[in-house]
Length: 251
Ligand SMILES: [Fe+2]
Ligand SMILES: [Fe+2]
Image (cartoon, rainbow, N blue to C red; front, side, top):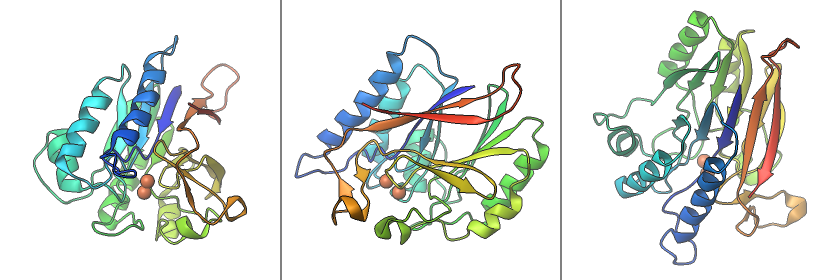
């Protein structure tokens, strides 16, 4: 199973008065790269912050852009997204402010795309509705499970992002059984890997910008580094193992 993982498109982000041109150009560069691959992917994960201000016009652009991908797209909201506009404009569903949790079966895996956003806040929470849903998804799955949401549940060792992480990592850890192969996040705008609750945690790099560490400067966000993506490859061949290896690309 092979997934591309992209995150934090922030479509509509105004960079020095450009009205979102730069953000859209970077997102297009990523989409074009994936569409131009000589081989096929099982899907493309988009782990939140699809729009910058959560406006319907931004989701119209996101929808148009993602519709051009020749692979299945699996997405979840981030703190910059708006549940109502995301639902109505991107998903074509009725308006509503409940968490947007979506279940996918792909390439022999169950993929739970969870909504860790808190309306009006930058930090994240997997609320009771979402944790109950996830618990059931994991219990009922006959396949290995991937859990994906926006806010990393562990410190990134960078003060800015560490002030707006997932608030309830302990509650999430309680629902993760052995069936869960990996946890995949966005939000931090930096390619980063660690472990969480005894399994791999991979944070996708940002498409729109890159988080930098204190050692790199005191500006937190770098707009000059190129957009980057991850490829997650899962072991399903006769070597056994469901293990995950992640490869990163700067575009
Ligand atoms: Fe973001
Ligand atoms: Fe975010």
